[in-house]
Image (cartoon, rainbow, N blue to C red; front, side, top):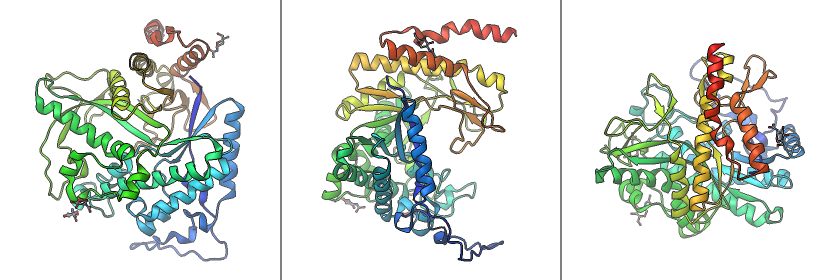
Amino acid sequence: MKLLHGLALVFLLAAASCKADEEITCEENNPFTCSNTDILSKGKVSRGVNQGGLDYYHKLIDALLEKNITPFVTLFHWDLPQTLQDEYEGFLDRQIIQDFKDYADLCFKEFGGKVKHWITINQLYTVPTRGYAIGTDAPGRCSPMVDTKHRCYGGNSSTEPYIVAHNQLLAHATVVDLYRNKYKFQKGKIGPVMITRWFLPFDESDPASIEAAERMNQFFHGWYMEPLTKGRYPDIMRQIVGSRLPNFTEEEAELVAGSYDFLGLNYYVTQYAQPKPNPYPSETHTAMMDAGVKLTYDNSRGEFLGPLFVEDKVSGNSYYYPKGIYYVMDYFKTKYGDPLIYVTENGFSTPSSENREQAIADYKRIDYLCSHLCFLRKVIKEKGVNVRGYFAWALGDNYEFCKGFTVRFGLSYVNWEDLDDRNLKESGKWYQRFINGTVKNSAKQDFLRSSLSSQSQKKRLADA
Ligand SMILES: *[C@@H]1O[C@H](CO)[C@@H](O)[C@H](O)[C@H]1NC(C)=O
Ligand SMILES: *[C@@H]1O[C@H](CO)[C@@H](O)[C@H](O)[C@H]1NC(C)=O
Ligand SMILES: *[C@@H]1O[C@H](CO)[C@@H](O)[C@H](O)[C@H]1NC(C)=O
């Protein structure tokens, strides 16, 4: 496999600086009236472009190419300019389609000569649900009764997620259409990223559990993949969500259907599914309840899915299931017409409460990566799934959405107090050897067993 590298172009690229001669007035106390952030003139190409931002990304892309690293660029990784949220609630309004198109146009024009892999929107499922149903992510909208922590500034958890998802699909498809028409000569590829999960029946002898797992598949993957392949939402969603689910006009359906050259698929975990009544209408209802499914990491016999993924004393531990990546890949191939696939994220976090030595001895991350890569190889070989690349999440410890610096996802350790102070972790060294072996000899399998051989190292460390 080729060495790939993802980077997220911040939407702020199209941001001009403040005009120096205009006075900025800010309130020191409630009620704050700073919502009119026009004065920052960010967010719209028509208001000016930040040349410093463009220069920064040119340098970054050039440096990657120099090192033979293929850049995959994500246009929107949930970082909407605040001014577009303030002006018209961002993806809740169709105005976003034109602004996103202008921004993408600028990026293709500037960088398209050297970037040949474009991702429109990261994890289509995430902003509608976490941003507009439960309100834990930006912009933080939800229904008042859902807002137990008092952090949503407004919203409707039953309706807004569907509108936002719809506008995301239209914005995505508009940008793909632009790329295919205006920038065809650049000869690149473009697609969205889906967060995927696999769903297993909570009780495999119970037809209701089996149905719940497939229903969850439709609400999780079908919500986006049916429009992207057929230009309409799944029938089961139409039935259950009814008039809260927007419709595509004929023209829009045509625009959205087939609007990708490849699919980026992120995979982390699998869950068990069982039926659960959907309490709509109710003041505490969210769009995520419409599937009528309860998700757990243990099944009817009380068995956990696999090794520990994240320890969480508040909302419960999660567990991982490497074979899930096999099922997801097979499902996408079979159900959605054998697409070209890149696995755009797959990885494992450790708590930042670990000290440096513990963080670097990350044999559990090697177990996670090697077990998933093993099932990925198996599904490519057995089912002929067209997977052309794999990105480990992440290259280095990073500032994680919602979790900040409380977890570490990196193949290399980063000292938050001194960012130049970094070390490859054991997983980074393993991954380096794995890639080296794969590039030279794709049949070589030794490294997929490397976590077993690391047992002796683990022991030595414990002795030390
Ligand atoms: C959300 O919108 C729907 C449809 O307009 C409405 O029936 C429902 O009461 C609203 N929910 C909340 C919590 O405002
Ligand atoms: C979508 O179309 C269906 C069938 O024509 C209709 O019943 C439904 O109310 C429409 N939904 C919206 C949001 O307009
Ligand atoms: C990569 O493989 C080559 C030849 O097999 C070897 O000389 C080199 O040290 C390896 N590099 C790493 C980082 O493992």
